[in-house]
Structure formats: structure tokens, C-alpha cells
Amino acid sequence: MQFKKVGQRIQVLRYEGYDKDRRRAIVKMVGSVHNRTFEPTVGLIESLTDDERVELDEFIERKRKSSEDERRWSDLRLAVNFIAHSAEALAVGGEFDLDGMTEARATAIWTATRALQKSMVSAGFPPPGRRKKNSVSTDPRQQSIPEA
Image (cartoon, rainbow, N blue to C red; front, side, top):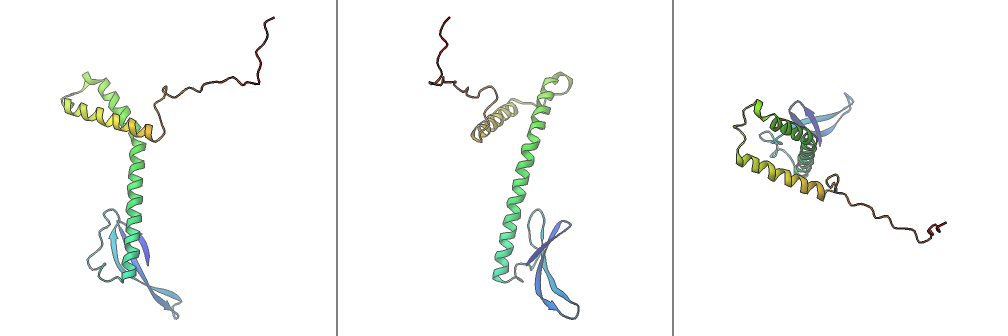
């Protein structure tokens, strides 16, 4: 089976042989799957063989995982901008209406900030300034300089 992205859909194509007269493969579109929701068209699943269903399921699972990974990386790239803009918005608080900022929302922001900090530390990125200092041990081969 082959999969071809066309617009918002992914076409599911089946190879059905070779046409010697026209010198090209005979490829039939069996159905399609939506590019983001991965919902198949009506009748697609019924028209596939067992092996083709397995292949389609594996393809959809790979695409879904890839899509989730892209979304997560995008969120990480945008996190810096969101945090910086949020800090700026709170710093100029007198210039705009802070009625949308409630105690519950502030608590949610603090909770999310702590969760982000824990995730960063567990991923191996401790906060700057809190890194362990390397203890410099004196090499025993070095001799102290005698006083003159």
C-alpha cells in the first residue's frame, strides 16, 4: 500500500498490477484518511484485506505519534515567549485590566511553573546558579612551594 498526502487528506492507494500496454503500474485509490484526525472515509476499512488493515493501522499510529511529537516540540519552543510576555503583562499591570487575574488563576500559574521546573531538572537542566561547583582537589604529585 501507498499513502499520499493531498490537501487535508491522506489517500490510501493499492497496487493492482502492471499495465504492459501503457507501461505503468495500476494503482487504485481505496479511500482516504483525514490528515489531523486520522478518521478514515466511509467504507475504507471494509475494503481492505487483513494485511492492509494492519499496515494502515501502523501508518496511522506512526503519523499520530509524529504529530504529537511535533506539537510537544512546538510547545517547548513557544514556552519562552509565553513566559516572557506573561511576565511583561504582569509588570505593566496598571496599564491594563487585571480583572482576569484571579487567585485561582495565580495558583494555577504557580503550580504549572513548579511542574515545569521539576520537569526541567529531571531532564537534566537544573536552574542556573544552582549548579554544583566542582571541588578542585590538589594533585598529590604537586608539591607546595617552600617558603623562601
